[in-house]
Image 1 (spheres, rainbow, N blue to C red):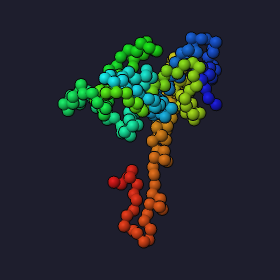
Image 2: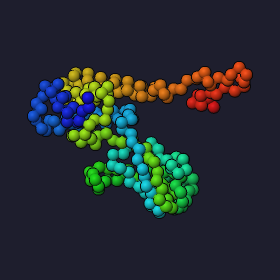
Image 3: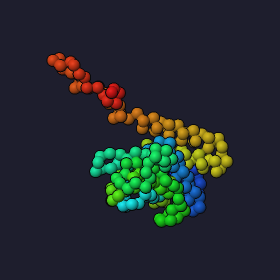
Image 4: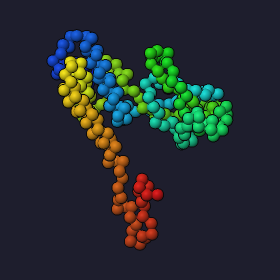
Length: 236
């Protein structure tokens, strides 16, 4: 079963034996859900909080504003050349004596500034990045983002599988107990929240597909034992 932010808030309020007709309290619990999701996303870099989109350059434009929900960039790839742009800071570019006014096909990117957004979220800060060299024409880059899960609306579906919803519930129950000054309960639920986040992190980092094993086909046959095809993740 999938939950919207509001549905999960009402379920937690009912489980906590609070009044679900109190609109302000419902809004507060919804915000606690967003906060718990934000913590979960920051701790695990969970795949539900990753997205890929296209960045289209403009000729002679150095700086580009990122979508407001973005909190980090995983990669910037140039599909035309099948290469990734390399991350560099402005200071590093200057130390390497790069011509920062050079106009050509970009090879590097870096964070430029943090600015207050105007559209569509005037109260949100967004990141800007710069490209080096400055684009000489239009390029279409594939960009992998880490996004901020805290921007879910009341009616939005929570982007987690069911086995992770209990983790979010535990985090919110900790907030609710803290509000009630039930510090023992808050500590207990917080411990469950943190323990489950740790389990999720371990499971995410030890996926079977990320650990290739030697296969029979990797061993040379009887007539040719000169070379074995070793796993490049472990041998070079």
